Length: 361
Image 1 (tube, rainbow, N blue to C red):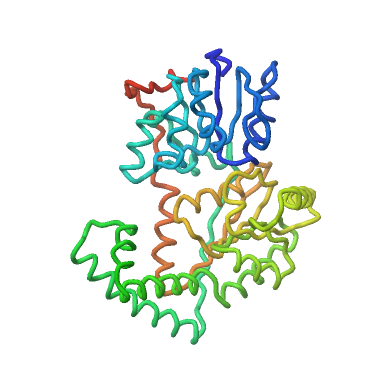
Image 2 (image 1 turned 90 degrees about the vertical axis):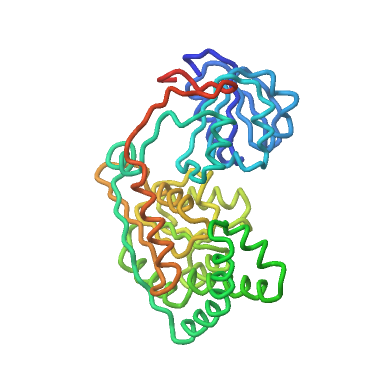
């Protein structure tokens, strides 16, 4: 922004990130910073807005900026709120994300809206310098006899329907399978069985017990626990008297809990989605992934919660994996994403309608 001297619009997904961006820009910018979102409506030469506010104000503010900065850019390219980018005439655009789009259709759409990838580094490239060093520890968990029986029964109802669909449509996507299965009673039963199987693998008695064992092993560390849903978060919170961070917890209470966590007065937080993205989480050394709902992208976001660098720090991410279930394969795919993009790259190509910033900008 300093180099271009351009009128700049920075858009971010959440009110928490809006506050963080306003504070960061204000520290390095001499004039006042505009804000669109969380009840504020001040437009300045540099303005920070939430995605929703930018979308609602697109017709008015679209012609007024020369540089567009999109934080958490992977949220775009799926049709939802894309008009916020389409109606902005800014020729210079910069998208930021820790989890770039992988599906070709999504990636191509982002290239049209923002531009091509111009620089890329993996978590491993940054660990030990800009990020803390880390290690991941997979922990295999067994189902009880009753849980195993329930899981096998549910998968027996799901697999034949999926296999038949894949035989007829070998290159189809999961959403296409859901649309197909939703048309018949057998298909709907298969979908219900699949959801029940995921509930069993994402959170079970074995995982609940192992969480306690890990907490006992790290009695003086700050710990973040990640679950796939609020029910699991509340079950862990009740069992081990841990502060839950969910969508049901008000913003002020969340802020107070994070401050207590930063001071060490709370040593552990448990969350389903709230801590994944958009909240500046204080320093934590230990993470426990009990279950996930959104695959590799969520995995990288969660790991990032632990990687605030401090001298001598080596973060540890425990991943609880239910043995001999579909979760084992999902865990393998999540682990591979941390090492899939190992070479920084700089591309000179740029779409004609949305040129990227010059090198170094």
